[in-house]
Length: 373
Image (cartoon, rainbow, N blue to C red; front, side):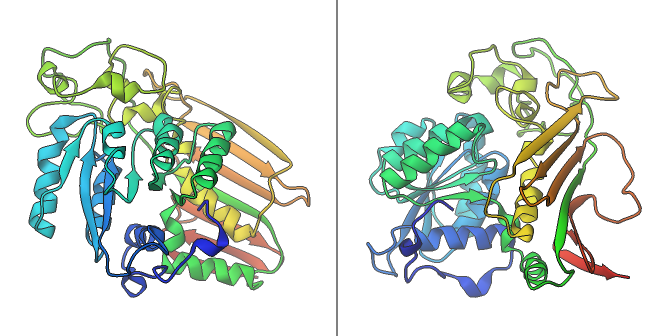
């Protein structure tokens, strides 16, 4: 979280006792600081959720469930999504949020206190900076940005406009993960010399398709990224009539619409995403850095990968390894495999390992175990 130490106020633990889920817990910590020291603790906080299709749905669910919080506005370039999300909020929480297709118009609303952003990665930096300039606090999905330079501009904006910016790394709010890290920091496995993260997440190939909408139902779509939106598929002419694709591109290079450069599959294109190591892996890399207790930057970084086994339009690797080495020799290794792979004799497909002078420890989702001898 980019913030000054003294910005935490009496609202720090708005609903601390009810952290039933990591997403809700992370949302509570963020909301607790919004409007800090400027309002009554009983005053309603108005939130806008930007990007509501996939992860944005979890943002809406978590935020709308917090006392004194109202999801005032839903923002998305895809108008096909509004009806379903509005209905969910109405049925669960008894009110109807407003909608907006342009983030800039939403930011003009003086009643909005904070924005929760779940848009493609290429929008993260600009959306965050705009929100800070408009006086809004920001919760932004990981990865924080596409480049180190962008991250620096986000930090500068947060400080200049005195806004709170939290990056969505929700695993830190899981009680068992917190217990595991506490165990590590108290010397439970001795001096930790290496941390390793794995993301063994086989994905079907996305295929390759011509630019432009489809005039026919293309039949079965790849498993990831294209569930039906009602009865109309996201590549159809009718569906795209309610999509502002230029706004979706935003700061990215202008390219024609392609189903593999839109909903979800944008992750596998360099203009918008950075593959699995920027999709699922950041959650575990964050835990690795936290578990190692590092506040310094690594001295050396090495990474390589490639696209194996399938043919498709995917640009990013489906197999990748990155190694970070710190000045004192401690190593952090992160590995992603999007093809079929075994779990190397352990039961962790997506998680963490720590190796120390007394033993080793694994974190598997919300569970952890240590091993000695």
